[in-house]
Amino acid sequence: MEQFLLENTERYKRLVAAFKPSALDKKGINSAAASPEIVVCTRVRPMLEDEVAEGFPCGVYPRGATNTVDLHELKRPVRGLPTLSSSHYTVDRVFGPEDSTADVYESVVKPIVPWAWGGGIATVFCYGQTASGKSYTTAGLEKCVAESLMGGSLDGERKIYISVVELAGRTAYDLLNERKEISILEDSFGTTQLAGALEHRVANKESLLGHIEAAAGLRRTAPTLKNDNSSRSHAICRLRFENPAMKSAEEGLLYLIDLAGSEAARDKTTHDATRMKEAKEINTSLSVLKDCIRGRALADAEFYAGRISKAPAYIPFRQSILTKTLKHVFDPTSTRSCKTVVVACVNPCLADIGASKNTLRYAEMLRVVGPKPKMAEYDPWVPATWNNEQLQSWIESNSGQPPIDPLLLAPSESGLQLLRLPIPEFLTRCLKTEGATPEQAQAFQTKFWAMHVDSQRRSRYINANKAAGDGKAAAAGDNVVSRLASLDSSADPEPDAGSVPFKERIRPGMVVRWQTRPEYGSFAVGGKAYAMVMCPVHAVGERVRDVKGVQVNPQSEDAAERKGETYLCALVTPSLLPGSYGISLWRQVVVKVEDMVAEVLMEWDEATRYYYMTV
Image (cartoon, rainbow, N blue to C red; front, side, top):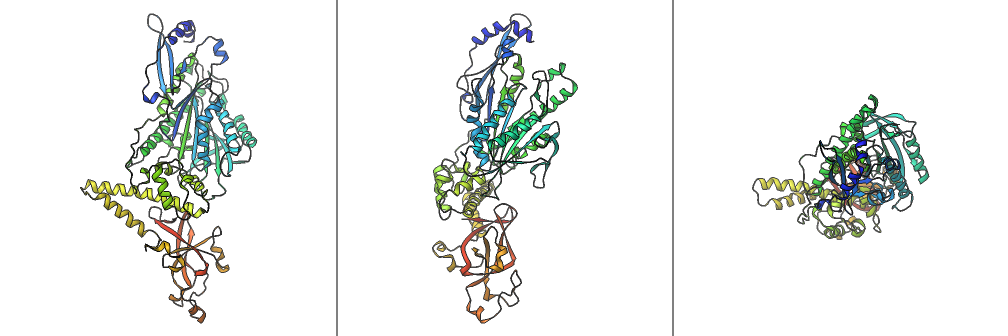
């Protein structure tokens, strides 16, 4: 085949020069990504010196200022002269031979680094035929990421940890621990863990890059038809970010993944049985990866289109050790916010046009162009329908005291976009408001999400009533949600409660933050203690004792003088889930009014069976 191409190079060049591309449809015009959660781009590397020296022409051409690539093949006819077969492929961004790795980073990777830094999950895949520039691109992107992380341009401080694992066949190895074998397991919460892999904390760019280079030196390679030093495994570099200011917040994750080079089955004439078995395993894992990325993109498209699916989309992430390791990136039931970038690296040489065609076809299939979301009619009960102006107005009126600055929390986001914001980033933005406390930020975030969950419950209620022919379904849904909210909150139901100091309206069920005395000092968590008022001390019998075993109402003259000033309260303590609390009704303490610092509003969440702070 190569001899046929060399003999007809001049004719091929003439045919390419005479080629007139067809008009592109709207998806071929350079525009924003098809999905806001996944960006698929193509990088066409320059022709190599040995390819040019052998006389092979270029077969892949980015089409001007569009996101489309033209690919030209030379076909051998049964009789007559060779003909040109052309095809084009559309992705979100196209990078040509003149674009550097820094250009790729600035355009598609740099925007997702703050996302991971803020508590989300960001993943970068480099995919393509062996010798197409995957490892070169990955290494360049890793250097750019190190510059961003250690350059001081990101808000706040983080503890940064790195781990690098290799997936070869069905086995995983730790490349930062002398290539020791590790296990990929799911814990009791369904989270995938790299059991046995070591994490190393890094404090500067040199340390970070040093670990990456050490891991690269231990990666499995072998000679193939196209590359004497081809990567025969998937390498996953995971960066984990802990926020010291929010110890209970979920950590951010950034994955930089150099996928194994794909090989064609036709290469069996030059590869032995071991190499062909490797190629089969690699191609199988890449096929599963494609199904998982596309499945998650379709699920995200449904979400942004405002559709509520009865059942989550089926995504086969357990069919491959690669996708099982990255389960939280693909799992549609996951609550974590994920952003993904796929860089499809393409070899432009005409001799490799078949492999390049497969790479471009693979990349194009990852790009999901869903229906353009219709702007839903504004509904004050449904945050997903709010534009930026409506969202900012709601934030200012419902974020407690002091009001969270809406320009700091949602400078440009809609209600739907703010729902996708990682929780640590949401809290960080809230705390930029002068006077805002971590408790207020957490409570407001919980309130916002609770409203979103209630709106979905309301939608199902309305749809059920409409199906039954009830024309007043919307009003009934509003009443149901309103009634549930009032019953599940510790807020004072009286309309004038906000204008009366809380110490003048203490009542059973009120939750307060209080200053512990020495006898109760052990019940303060993080320097703060919370309790739910039950009744005045003088109202209890003489057999009642507090959590320390001390009699609550000794019936003394001193106790009689303190009527109405001291209350029997139940301890409110942090629970299992982040931001959740439990009320320990049988762990009782005595709290003086003078030790009560502030009222704390709490709501009961039926789904998790926990209490959460609100504003």
